[in-house]
Image (cartoon, rainbow, N blue to C red):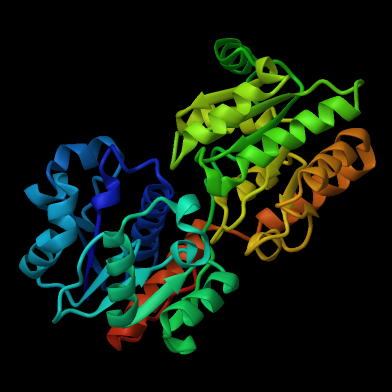
Length: 392
């Protein structure tokens, strides 16, 4: 069976987005699963340069790369480039890691991952996506042979929003990068160099992920102000790590108005190694999001043994297994109170650490890859044997 994968998010400009990380880790694990189980599956991808793939660790005989110039121009790829390139590969099925990256080919079955229903569930001022993304997501949701999503919360929302049958949507949890996010001690010299460069001192409260309004970072900053004002004996810094997203200026303006603005740091984009090092050194991680489909940063923090608290919104209690401390995301007072409880209670920190580690251990890219391959073959009507397996 030939599976053509929409690999637009492998491009350098997109590979560190949430969808880009999902595709890179999933594709790597799929190649390993195919090799381990000797599955009769060929993966085909698209790029403007095969050298780019090779340098990023995807030079594999199990993956055929087709040259596609239109993939460099996102709008062309969205509005027909992927469909034309797919036709030349003659696949049995197409897999897209997101429903808004391209128009589907009318004669080739499609399996697409729709990570969440954020554009339909949040106000437009918090989302920042254009009409093209709305239309493409709706079209792919309607035409796909099967939809993969990353939480049961997202599945329920997708069924409601797009009016699709429940049995068309399969929940497959994502994984996390176990090589980087784990309980091994961070390198002390690398830690000192990174914190010095970023002007961060310990202890610090961390949020890592895209900096935009949907992440509720304006309220997190206000809650930090309240925490510092109420607990004069506590002086942790607040670190917001990650690239700038929709309406990030509003978040920065809230920071600039803070009486503790000199203690609030916005790092901008960091490499995978830098980000994991920062997470491991955090005293507390806070996930105040208004809506998430899976929330990889939360799982990464839990996997590092960092005490983590989260809002009680969308999928966050589901993905964290109800193992964390939760708060009402629209209440600055509730966020501040939750941070204060954890900062002041070592027994609570220990409980959150143990519970987070146990829950994070359930998320593995290899399992995600095996289940995704099964979904692809099911959608094509092919039986996939040995799908569990020898891959470690």
